[in-house]
Image (tube, rainbow, N blue to C red; front, side):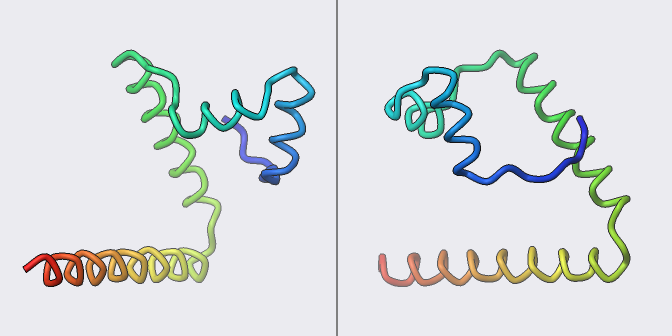
Length: 90
């Protein structure tokens, strides 16, 4: 898997429309992803892991620290939201 410039949502949409997909087809594919076999799930997980490893290796130490902070901040936000939901359910 090559790391390249990330496509914008609009360019992805335009490509799918050019291939003849309807708006409904496009929306459905994002909301209800296709059924996958366990083998396909394993392959997808491997490719994602390989991509993450390459991305991480290409980062500077400063970029890694920034990424870690963003992940930790997001995890803390989710923990607080869960706590808020749990306390409001009581």
